Image (tube, rainbow, N blue to C red; front, side, top):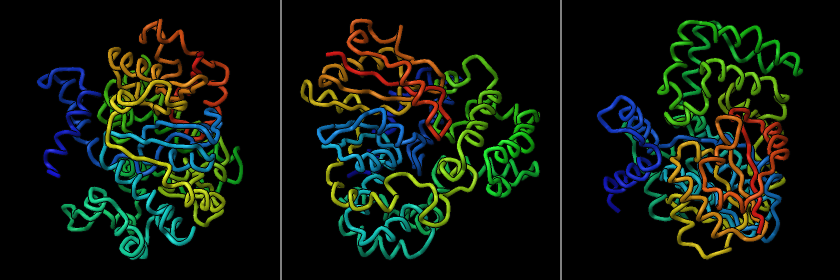
Length: 410
């Protein structure tokens, strides 16, 4: 494998998804900056709620899922529902390597304690010994090469699991920068975790966080699309997220929901945002795949997940008619042109079994498909508007405007 050629291929595929303007234009330059940033590790943890996903998909033992991999928390968690097969695809090779490492951990680490220490705590040198003994010998060549590679610091990438993995990656660094900014304004998130009730959480938001959005520096920062690249939001999605409003107003609303929408004891997304890791102890809120009661299922079913460095549409193009019944698009459609959306939904419709379900999220509240996907294609799908709103209300990550469920009519 030629690493330089591989990186060029990744950037080319990402460019096809993100680039809308000429490289010499201001918009084109910002798009290419995002593409460059997105070729490394972006999401140590995925920010879509897997429990909402599983409820919306109504998984059965016959379900065959195609999903965007991202950080892998969702596809790993789906194994708890016992689907027949999961294919995880992603344009980012770092995400592919991360999910394959998690699968190796589920299959080969000797206990839940080892697994939780490695992928949940992710901050002790004992994980490096576990990697060498249990994981490295069982990884494919490309994945082993990724985690063994030394960065500019001289450390191997796998050392992140001894140094606080969730503080790294593009999202981890973004959250760290947000914490630094908050400290500069005298805000400490430690007091948030002392709030015993939703009322206490709301009081923290109103007294400590809401005033920050009135500061001139925060207005200036949030008004620049590049300021949100750390959230994995490209320029086109920034526009959708803003929806014609000031970005600071939208971010204030989303942050308010993250702080106040759910008790902290139930919301591991809030712990990641405000404590930069999961709650200490095995009894705190965790993604389903990290919970003790699901570890045996992960061990038994890890081989059901296939992880590919490919685009969703290109993968489907190679599949047989009526071969899949669950599709998980995350928020990727926010990035797409009309032509890309139509290409994607043509392949989803061709490969869908009767009763197939598609779920996705959007930065803005409404579904983005009407008026953009061909009416003849969209007419074959039933949009479950009421269910979509209900699932959106349950999504603990709180950062998306809408959750959407479509069910195949034929």
